[in-house]
Image (cartoon, rainbow, N blue to C red; front, side, top):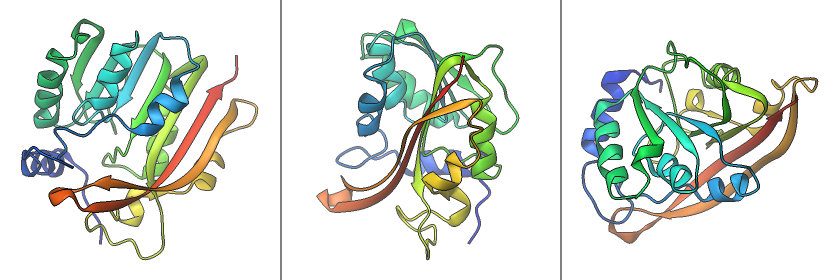
Length: 211
């Protein structure tokens, strides 16, 4: 099964996820890897590539970062802005509607992060692309779906073209350019609809761009 991760796909995705309650996209907490991987960083400028409902961008802004949060879905951004308004840190957030396969920022950032974002381009090439937005001495944080054999694209089992392994990601990082800090794969559970436990196979990669 293949997917066209274009604007129409993501608008439908977020419109179908309007329901609130345990496991809903509107109310999901920030990804648990975010605090762990950024707690030792000095707040500065950040880009959330594929921000979705904004949980991670809002968390960063509430911890002193100035965040540009970009997503292709106007539905997702509207919900993110609504959530941010109650967060106490909206002045440190800028929302950008953009197709990340063609859009690029005007400046580089101290931190570029992405959590489960799937643009209309090959996944590993997307990671290559956003790596170019990290300034010297800055950090790239990738949290993605771990590629596991037999993934079909149903539920929380993404198709192969939307997933990767930590080895596949770090193999593209030139050691002269990047220092690998974290390269891990995890299985965790998330409370889904009806309170049922949903397994998530995650890949977490954090690298620092050498000065």
